[in-house]
Length: 257
Ligand SMILES: O=P(O)(O)OC[C@@H](O)[C@@H](O)c1c[nH]c2ccccc12
Image 1 (tube, rainbow, N blue to C red):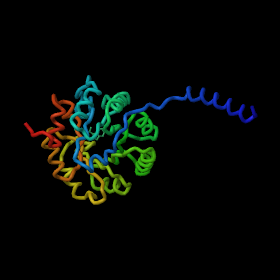
Image 2 (image 1 turned 90 degrees about the vertical axis):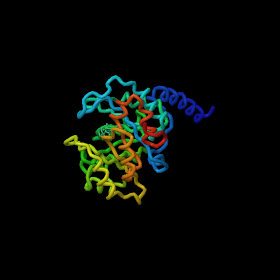
Image 3 (image 1 turned 30 degrees about the vertical axis):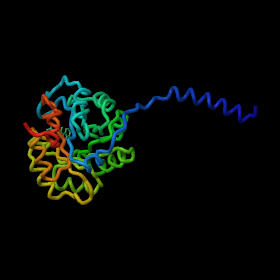
Image 4 (image 1 turned 45 degrees about the vertical axis):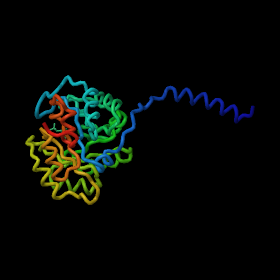
C-alpha cells in the first residue's frame, strides 16, 4: 500500500463520519415555478391564514395539511402559508408541513427583513417569498430580491400604488402582487387592481396577482377581467365550508351556485 492509498483510506473514513454528523437538509416534493403555471392559465394562490390583525381569529385550529390538500386537489396554482407568529398566528412549522404535503409552489408569507428569513423559508420548503415594497428601504428590497433569486426562489413583490409598482418593475420583478388592502388603514378595494392594471407592464411577461379582499368567486372573475393572471385569497377560503368549490368556481372549472 502506497502512502497515497493510506491517506485516501483515512480520508474516506474521516469524511464518512463527517457526512453522518452533518445536519441534513430536508427533501421536499419538487414544485413547478408559479410564473410558468400562471403564464399558462389563471390561478388562485390559496392561503393558510389562522388569524390576522384586521380580523382577529379566523380559524385558529385549522389542520394546515388537510386544508392545503383541499386547495391542491381543487387545482390551486400555489399555496401561501402565513408564518408570522405574533400577528397572524402562523409558524414555520405550518410551512414545513404544507411543503412536505403538496407538489404545487409554496409561498412563505411573512414580513421579510433579513437574508436569514429567506434561507429559513427555503429550508422549510418554500419556493416563493414575499417582499413588500412599502415595508422596505429600496436598498433592502433590492438586496433581498437578489439574494432569493440567487437561491433559485421566486419572489412575489407586493405593491399598492404607482410609485411602488415602478420600483417593482425596475427591480425586474416578474410576479407582482397588487394588494387591494391598504396596510395602513385596512380598507379594501378592487380599485387598486383596476388602477395599477392600467400601468402594468404586461408586455414584459410579468404577471399581475390581485391580492386580498375577495369574498366570492365573482370577485376573482372581476380581477381576471382587469388583467390579473392570479388572485391571492385567504380569509374567504379559510371560512368556506367548501374551499375546493370556491377555487373551482374562481378558475371556471365549476359554475357558481
Ligand atoms: O384574507 P384575504 O383578504 O383574502 O387576503 C389574503 C392575502 O392577500 C393577505 O393575507 C395579504 C396580502 N399581503 C400580505 C402581507 C402580509 C400578510 C398578509 C398579506
